[in-house]
Length: 519
Image (cartoon, rainbow, N blue to C red; front, side):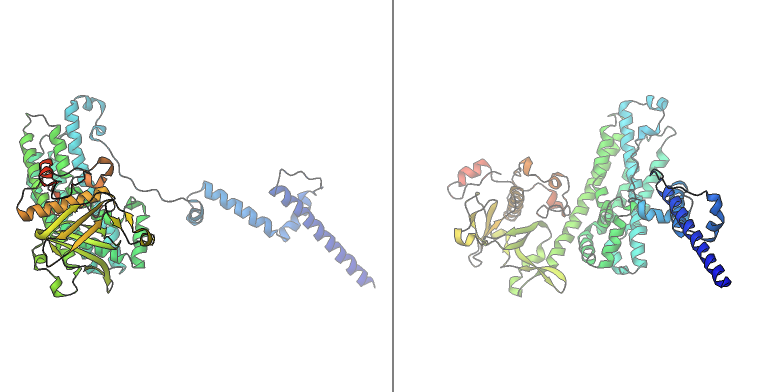
């Protein structure tokens, strides 16, 4: 009986002690977590239960205390690799994009040096420095295209070596070319940071740019292959990751591959800017004039080569229904004057090609995952071509559900092409998206017809500024921006094209042909 009584009393004492301990710990925890909340409960001194706290560890409080230390160390101590990595995954924002410095030549001088130069000389040195910095940036981009895109895709087997060679070309071979110009400009720089004469340096260096002939002429096929490879999820994911990286400067791969071409067309502008700020009696004037002439000849040659390559590229994509449809003149076509998507009178979409010898109407199709153009009707020789500019609202276009009941809608931006050869018996009414593209087509057609008939090209009819595309107003148009614009490839595309008829011709032929509307 005594043993059972003692055991009962001991168990009651233990239960009372444990309950008192947990009550005390609860109050302490509540004050720590919410110290602002007032409490009326009496809290026992911590010294009386310190031994029991060591025996029964409140895991809840330890966990919270540990979290507080962790958050403090993440904010105050950036040297802990484990904790900083965990914090970065939650709190860090997107990596900032890498930006290039835009330092001016005058900013590299102190106040006393700057005051020793005239305003005209400062502008001249600024133009030379811009040429120098542009070469540095180009070299950096060419090296980046190799290290960040070409080599990783080859190592990860994302593309084959043959595919990469077709897309990237010989970019590595052009780096020493631009490093040479950079070295010569550095050697010519005087102690005061100025370059006295640059014309002869550029004249001796420019012939090396002819190496870009093959690269520029292959760009169209390279772009087509790159777009095709982007359908691969691995390629798409890799390029997207690169685009989101700081080194890309928000530029995609093709932007890097197109940098050499865009750099080529800047050389005449840079040289003219240097010449503009060069005194007339400066010995560098004659050399700069000669350098501008040389670079223009080189660019014209590159454009001609690229135009021929582009023309052949699209000829190879034409698919004829039979051999009778293939006109022998297609082999004589060396220039693609204009091409793009139009609609015929029934509303069907056609992709029309205006070559120097033929007008070819096609329909885009896909054969074995290969895009091509199925020829629609017999190609019309340009020498047999008749062109008619139609007024807005004169023609009703079909092809819509409502047009089946309303006899079509009056269309704008429409012209008609037909064949003068009775055996062809073709006439096509074509609808263009806007007035600017319409005028581009009319100018291109009149140019081709004038060249075939041996007539001199008439002045080109202008387009209202509000309809003018920014890409067309540039010296060289961008084919990706405007498919109806002559791309920056062939020389004839850059020459002034024919314009509408003069007023005299309109008076003489007004009774025979429809009066053309000015755009």
